[in-house]
Image 1 (spheres, rainbow, N blue to C red):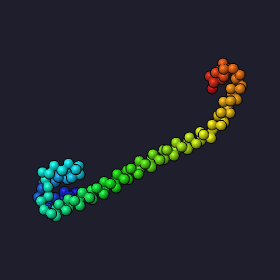
Image 2 (cartoon, rainbow, N blue to C red):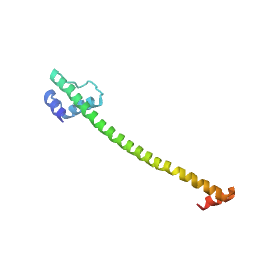
Image 3 (cartoon, rainbow, N blue to C red):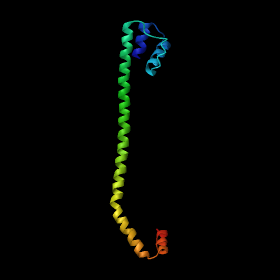
Image 4 (spheres, rainbow, N blue to C red):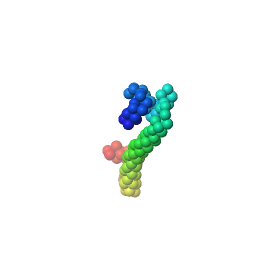
Length: 116
């Protein structure tokens, strides 16, 4: 809104022309059909661009932090669940060995597994 007010006042542009110029600055299109005429508005444009870059960089950085924190939390949860499973592996191997010994034959083992 600051840019809109400033360019309308100093350049005499309409709301539409000023909005068009600001859209060119933000999108980096820069068609060049509207440009500030004097040094002070040109300096304001450069400052306006830098402020916009800083604000956009901060907003993007915050969003990247949020996404990264979410992914790290999911990864930590996955590692925790995997570690819990790793603790259970020796017991599962013992159980499988006992079931195999009790079954005696392959057919008996398959029958036990079918019941589970």
